[in-house]
Length: 302
Image (tube, rainbow, N blue to C red; front, side, top):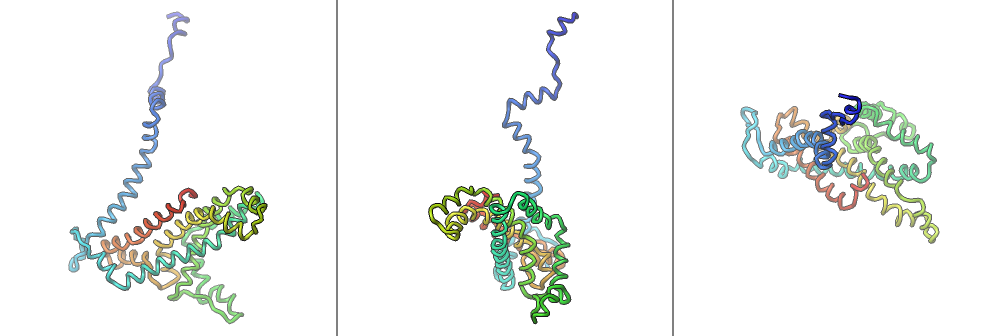
């Protein structure tokens, strides 16, 4: 074979090149293959575990053998709805989640507004790092740190003693878990609100001022309506995380919350069907909450 013949012969393509050419002409197939792995993981690990959870909620435990009986029954849900203790725990948990959400929103908004509209670029970067830094610490370390702060001999009582005051302590009150919840989940509220405020053009607020609106009116009629979906987006995190947490109440209070009841029935009581049934309560609450958040446009700010 002469040199001219070899030059005219097209180079042979390998299987990788042929596969690339095949997929480049089929964008839908390429997208399906790209999402196949994450979608399979979502279906098997997440949706599959939820399906098992909902299925086991309709089972029961045999009183004599303590074995799980795989027969359909609504007794677990009847016990939850008919028992005053479980209704009280559910209301307490929802009220705590709402209180933590409102507290974090009130604290987060001025911080996020300063970061987005007032602070210089260098200060903004420092504040972002300061907000993210607590997330790098262990969740348990932060909870135990608050346990030490709120203890009888903790720094909070030491600081309040000269004024004749005393901290909430680690007793049966709701103040201690409210403080710890609000601290732990605060970054999850600041970041979405900051992202929502950053998207508001400065010219919009300047136009409001030029039209004679005072600062309070500009905030109430211009800034707050635009930033409200971002606040709702942040509330999804604070509300849901508080709703399902059991470690903070276990460490700083003797009050029972939904997470504690589920944890006790999984471990001490060994009643997995009842634990699964009670675990569906926060799931259903969050489904309603997310539906309302979607109506308010919160997903546009995530």
